[in-house]
Image (cartoon, rainbow over all chains, first blue to last red; front, side):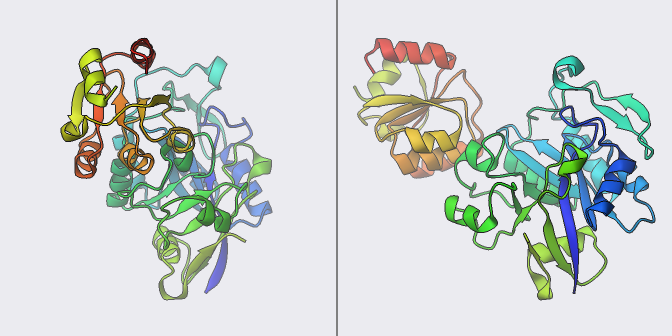
Length: 248
Length: 110
């Protein structure tokens, strides 16, 4: 087994609320500086910059997973994380169909920039991405898993868009690979505080970074038997064959 | 006043729990965040909400509220209706928005 330091919740300039410094080369540089081995790019309702960050990380040894922070109909934030471009693209097209047709107002909410691996401007996403989609929580989770992705409800302890605040208790029909607690709460405290968390559910922590400094603010250590990939992470979350995942 | 009488007065639609309309209503509570509802609503309350996730059934059942009133004719998913029917939880639907629904309840003396 080898230990890998992971931060699976990082925003880029494609999230209206993220700082303009969150561009691929700087994200990669910061991840390496913080000693991270694995990051996942998770912008609100879009995967549009994930491949650019992966490209920026080529030959650095940093593993970049392709993700999205989907907001469900119930206004619960859900990390949806993929390994392959095909899985990510299939999920993006399903999510696109559930995004309400409202325009973003960059003046009020901030701009949403799609950039290349150098961080150079390619386009602005005109849609209002920071808000609920029409996807119900359990249905979204089922679809992501059917497409091979990891499903992790984000910052379940947070009063805004955290699962526990919105839905009060862990939904009986929700199948997830893990749940994320914010840096405010230790996983052990979450287990004592929240009702009906499945006892075998892995609890992890990530930074939810919207600016560079914040990256690595909270991390999860994965003990893996092979090079990091989504399947290895899934096995670690299930504690299979000596693998594990824990918050240091 | 019981749930059935309120259904009559406000012209509400009974989505589930037709056999449980005799429960007395002792008060009301409004919220869509289920963590707030768990902390604030009481047994016998009529709970007015736009939240339709299946967890509303678990919360209503835990607290023993008299009925859930879904405002604005918000569509209630099948998974929620099935659970409510199984657990004997009353879900009512109001065509009016929350404000109007609550105003009418207040006028009735709830």
